[in-house]
Length: 389
Image (tube, rainbow, N blue to C red):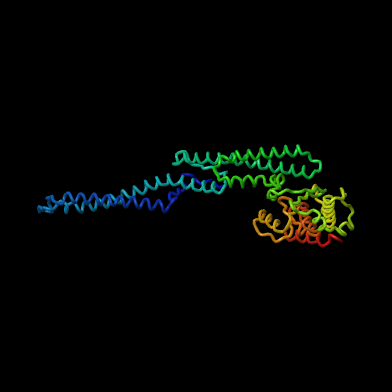
């Protein structure tokens, strides 16, 4: 077993800020030399007009006092400068170490805190300089940590609430009062998160983005109308889908474009037709496509319910795509897993288009880990190609 080295024998590193400490000591020594030169100059100036007698050997010599004391001042000044400079360097090195040691420690810890590591605690010795400052920093970190930890806990609770609402919305018999109660709970928790974050003086935009990230799922479940632009929407409910038609969309035209010829061939199970009007026809066709795609892929995710948004034309679809992804749209229809919504238009809707996007929805909900984009696209194309087999 190796013994720990004696702490008293450890070499201390006095040069922490080498460049600054060396510059500081050099300037101080230059100041000392300047002081000695000024003192010598003043002494010579005051003794320049006086005479001093002295014996050099057996002769009596009369000299100017300035000439007499110049060698003495020079030699004594050099000796004093050397000795005092050495002493000054030692003292300044010790003092600067006592100052810059804590500063170095503070710099490292504050840098870590600036990176978001709130587990850091600044430790200085009892008699170190800036001990009070380290206590202030530790108190600041503690005050930051408490509201952020509480906010993280509330965010987890929000996620659980959102899961509960999704389960209720997937159920046909979901009571409106229970959903309303859960929404009230979510609003209350968002208020608590806001209160926690009010400790920090940050911009309102940043606060909004932080809260939006904390409750994105709840926002999408509760209010998917952020794509509506204030327009009225007509909705149709089926077994698997809630289909929203933007104001101005011709339901009859949509019904005609969703051609389900031969789609029901080979199905072991078919959806129930609720009625014969246009809305019932559309609901039946969506469920029929859902049944067929699940049959083709042999994937049947539990409690799956899809939101569908149908717009008038491609321009509306492009605008929404930009809102969601902040880039130009290249598709005639698309499915967004994050908000579990399929987007299409009256212009481009068809049974094959719906089969393709519904396949994306089924794949994303079937696997616990969403497959790579190219794999998911190949599966969706397969469903599209075999929808009428």
